[in-house]
Image 1 (cartoon, rainbow, N blue to C red):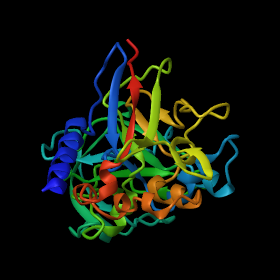
Image 2 (tube, one colour):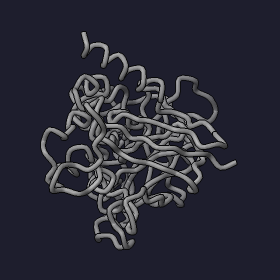
Image 3 (cartoon, rainbow, N blue to C red):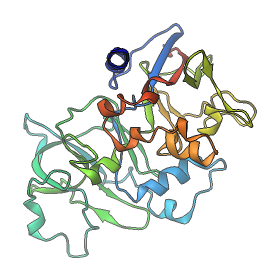
Image 4 (cartoon, rainbow, N blue to C red):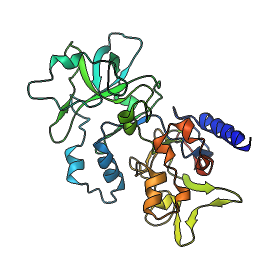
Length: 325
């Protein structure tokens, strides 16, 4: 009965916090997020960007490996477009065939057969899509990350047409009136079992605060491990590091959160970016932390399933923030 009550309380906190649009607050407000309460709005364009993401966000000097530079997405070119499924087709929508493993466009163009995608969960989909404006998303070109500023229905697909620094092109532009071909990165009801490849593209290390337009002055963020009788922020005897430090989110001069727009936080949306794709497992393991602290279920299970594990109620991401006017 006790575990059931804890589970219910976690559900209340999870859904009360939400993962969608941020609100504006002019005075400092406290916030608390659970470890499984990552944003549902952030994705990698392709699995090859797993390495690019970590290399980009872990770099402290702005120098990146060659593969990160070569695979950089060019968002300020004519060929770049992001498309989201729509159930209300209009003059701005198009029929699109999307694939999660779309190859680069060959010199002679894609074969016509790709214009008729079968509806295969986690693999391909064909339907009506609308093109997003630049105001509706955030892109990290080197990391290959797309963050939607507002919630999308879980049943919707989303895809991209893009080119990379090394002159590879994916998808067909919408300037023609033909069926467009897109590289899908969001699928309906993404899950580790039902759509395993698409599940890898859903980022589970981005946490959206309930406030937008975050002001850097007075901002506070910490990660604590809460258990009886109190809270532990020093990992264990012999490892004098805070969780925030282990997660590579601290300022070089102290152990406070390092507020760097575009690197550790997206102020407009209130998204906190953990540099590792699986911080509550990989970072802890690499730091030599006792395995009792590991929370790999965040990355292997859907949110509601991860909430049933003990560490769901132990880890808290908390602090206070206010919005710029």
